[in-house]
Length: 293
Image (tube, rainbow, N blue to C red; front, side):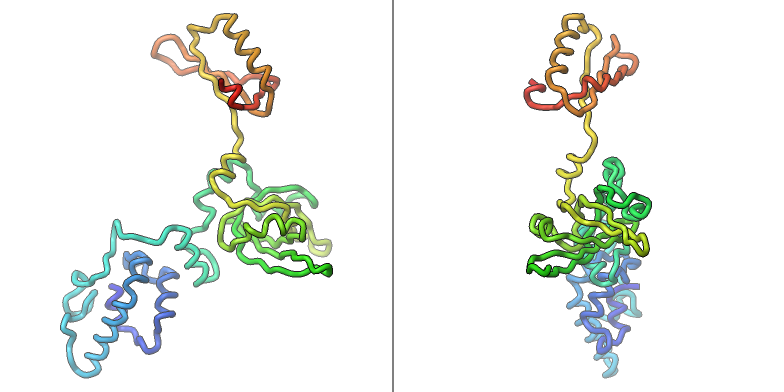
């Protein structure tokens, strides 16, 4: 019923500190409503309590404080470790890293989970679908580097074998020396990255692997850059004189680019929604400070 009761009952000569830390990081006590951070920080105190209770029990004495944490004595109310709502926890990245180090895989979540909706919008290719794509296809994937190893070529240059996983599957990759020099600073295990690569299928099995051309940390800057953007102009219908429209047309023609343009036409009065019109692609824009001015 509590962490302290567990310490009172388990043989701490057999269950050492490292084992207890592994149980905490794996989430073995989550059902008792503790955070893993609280248990790691209170582990020394809890072990000392358990050792004292067991020593007293072996000598026929009772603990000064009774059985803290759900035993037959004072009960869970006296346990000094807080639990329930509002108790501090490791941040998500540390929580998942500890979990992966202990179990060998992510269990309660995934480092990419917080990016999931945005990754769908930018059309990042799921690793599980690589087998359906053509050999030599250029792709972009979001994933976590689960493992990598450095090797030397015959010329003594460094190259790399890498394993990348997302929420769907894992793929092996190769980083050749020229690319490795550019990306080695971003080769960090268990950190979300955005990878530009080429698919290379094995001749014997057809299993896809990737040739990595570029790696960038997966952050909001990268996601913002990859999302499809468009220019939205809000126009008051009362001021849409022909001369004003002609001036707007001339401005748009001067800054051609790749962004779609949408006109939001406000209706007279307060009732009704604005009408939205998408301009022809010949008016696609390059959004710059000069255009803004």
